[in-house]
Image 1 (tube, one colour):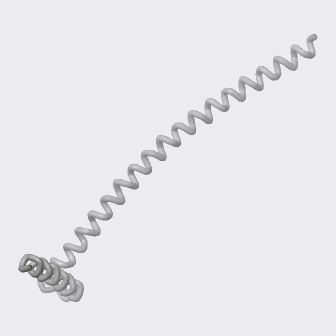
Image 2: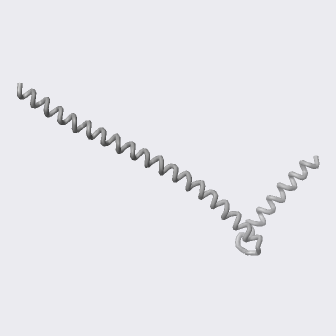
Image 3: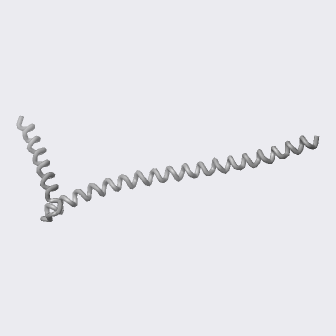
Amino acid sequence: MSVIAEIIDTLEKKLDRLITKIKSVEKENQELQVDLTKAAHIIQTQSAEIEALKSQYETLKIANSLLGSDDNKRDTKLKINSLIREIDYCIAQLAD
């Protein structure tokens, strides 16, 4: 009987260690999920900020060209021509 009791004690100890490891891994998994959620939120925020900065940059390029800078002059002319076409189209629709 003592051999069986020793085997049972050994199994219980191993089972306790296994349960402890499982709880530890589950806790670590939860922490990693929280970190992942935070990182995803940061990425989303930064992406929105990048898009806003790109828009501001394009606006500044156009404003700089309008002020007489030779840089990006072609882009500004194309943008103005595009706006004029849109205005002409709107006027034509109002005239009908």
